[in-house]
Image (cartoon, rainbow, N blue to C red; front, side):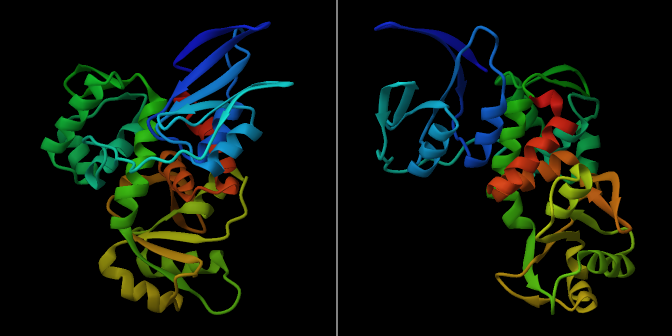
Amino acid sequence: MEAAYRLSGGGIEARVGVYVRSRFRPAEVAQLATRVPSTSCDHRMLFTEYVAPALAERLQQSKIWFADAQGNAFVSIPPKLLLNVSGKRPARIAAPKGQHFSAPGAKALHYLLKHGPRVRATYRDIREAVGVSIDKIGKLIRELEGEGTLRVHGRGDYEILNGDRLLRLWVDAFDARLLPELLIGRFAVGGEPDFEHLVREAVDELKADLVVGGELAADVLTSHLRPATLRLYIPPQRASNVRRQLRLAPSERGTVELLRLYSTDIASERDAFGAAVADPAFVYGELMAGGDDRLAETALRLRQDYLSWTL
C-alpha cells in the first residue's frame, strides 16, 4: 500500500488504502484482493493508467475500487454505488521506458530478485552469471537506486527496498522483451503428452544443459498446479537434436515449448525427473506473463512461499 486517505461526506466515513501502478495486469487482481489493508483501512483503491472493461469487471467483483488516467472509475460502499464510469479508452498506451525494459535488463532484474533482498555481487559477477554488459548493469542499478527501488551500500552490495516494484518490473520486461527473444518454438507430440517421459528423454540428450520452467516447474515448487504445458530451456544449438529425440512437430497449439537457455543461473536447487527446475522468481514471471486465473493463483502461492519479502 502506497498511501491511505479518508473519504467522508453524505453520511459516509471510510479509510481507503491506495495502490498506484503505472500498468496493472489482470493476473494481479488475486494478489491485490488478498492483501490485508492496515487495520485503519476499510477499502482498497487502485490508481493506474488504464483499466480495460474486462479488468474493470474483475476489480468490481473483487470489491476493489479504481480510477485510471482515462476517466474510468469505480467506488462503491454497499448499498450505495458512488461512482461507476467505464468504456473510456486511451488513444494509445505508451510502452514502459527505462533500463529494465529490455531483454538484458530483464536478465539483470531476475538476478537481483533471485539473490535478494540483500544482493552481494559486483557488476562483473552479474555479467558472468547472466551475460549482460557491465555498462547496462551499471545503468540499471543507478536507475533503480534513483527511483528508490534499491539502495547501494557499497561496491557489490545492494539492498532491495521495494521488492514489489522490482517484481512488477521483472514481469513486464520478461513478458514483453525477454520471452519473445528466448522462444525457439511451440511443438506438439503424438498422442497424450507424457511430461515425465519427455523430460527424461531431454535429460538423456542434454545432461546438465537443461532447465524446466513454466507450469511443471510451478507444480514442483508449490504442488498447486496440474501442468497443461511443458517448457524446456535448452542450448539453442541443440534444438534440432531435442526435437528429434522427443519427436516434436511444430504446432502453434502444441503443449511443449522450447526456449533458449541463456544462463544456468535461472535454475533452482529443485529438480523434476532428473532436470533442474527454474527458480521461484523466474517461474513467477512466467506464470504472471501467462495471465489466466489458474496460473495467477499459483503465482500468488509461489510468491507467498518463496518471495514473501516482496509483499
